[in-house]
Image (cartoon, rainbow, N blue to C red; front, side, top):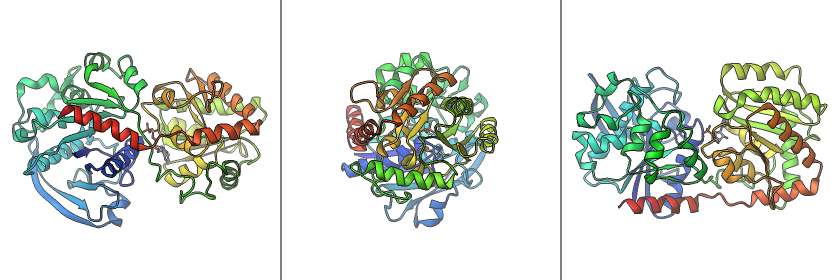
Length: 471
Ligand code: ADP
């Protein structure tokens, strides 16, 4: 099958979170399984662009309302990522360093989607399926069905995968003029709560909707930032498929960022060496259990409870554990972490920013990974942690609930709690400190979790079954 993935992120080209990881891996494993999977995304000005070779695939023009623009689609020349990668260049809109966070994001991603539609509709053949990811590609299913210019794609099935339903791409109705000539009777297919809602539109218009874990699919019917009724109504075409992880990128035996490589057999010694290097770099004590947090410092991740939970754990246990945080997001949370580094020197440190290399070192060197998330559609961090023998300490929600079992259960290897509160996190840190003293139990849990299979191969089969059901 020929599958066209449309996304705002794709690792290693541009990544802000889990979406990038998934779109960087799923197509690769689909190609390995014999499909022709391609990715099309905006051409941001990232390092990957300048370090690779490109050929021009298509040149076109379109309108965004009354603004006429020209675009170029370039293709990575060497199939370096294991699939064909296409970048859409629109000067003035997409030629930026960051992926998101600009005032004109609605214009940027609408223009990107229009360019993708013009490109696909210029082909002599039609793809078997167009697979759109999150709201930045959420207008495509609508355009495929209801824009007069793209009638030749109206019969092509579309799959829409929700990686995060909190962000929906809302736009005022004044921006409806951006969408190329469309059937005005279908206004309802764009709308939710009096505005254009690309995520809601995709849920309505896509042939099939998936999200990245079974539990999250269920949760969306009760908690989805205003779309609860829509998910309940459309549940017949919605399905949860758990993400995989790219075992080639995330492999403690070969990971180029690690101080020492290790396998399941040598996990205790291997992790200790990585921990020593990490602790030395951040002035922490390698003899104590090391808890880390990696991620966006936002409410969804319950990041704002961590400063208090960490400080009170340090006080009550008299510094029995060390903590290292890597992330960026809400400035108030960043500021609190920065303020803690000096007074808690030796027990706590924080890096505010995005650092892929350090994240690998932390998964390998830490003993415990904290994830108190309020919302976690799938969560990749806990799966990376497991692959590197790091005990996940997670709130029971979404994908965390589907992938982590509590150490109190038979064969359990993680620590689970129910509430995103300081008390629950502090109590769970206490459980971690206690189990850390039991070296045999720690080793058993590490060995067990490292062997849990979260590879993409079985996930690819689930997606293939969805595509086939639409033909
Ligand atoms: P989300 O997509 O909601 O942010 P996921 O758990 O699905 O969360 O994916 C997060 C991905 O982003 C992981 O690969 C994680 O390692 C990475 N990541 C998040 N924040 C940072 C950071 N500050 N530095 C490096 N990697 C990060």
